[in-house]
Image 1 (cartoon, rainbow, N blue to C red):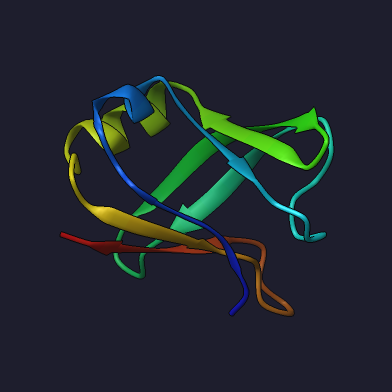
Image 2 (cartoon, one colour; image 1 turned 45 degrees about the vertical axis):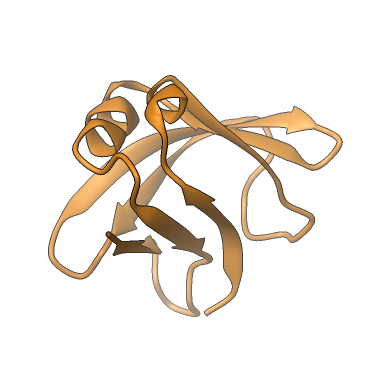
Length: 91
């Protein structure tokens, strides 16, 4: 699995997570990312901001972050044949 981004979640990430990504696994414009940790599923809003910058935000993202402050998360690209991204959460 290819890493899209990693972040140690802090309070200000509830509003959004803005990150640099130079790969091709994320679409341009605005989209909904279906994400799983293998047990739960989420739908996060993702927006391309140009110059390889992306932003994940929205109400579901905010709730996700709120219960995981100080956790390290890693977002991975889709695998062949999958229509979802994987996320790893480490407390």
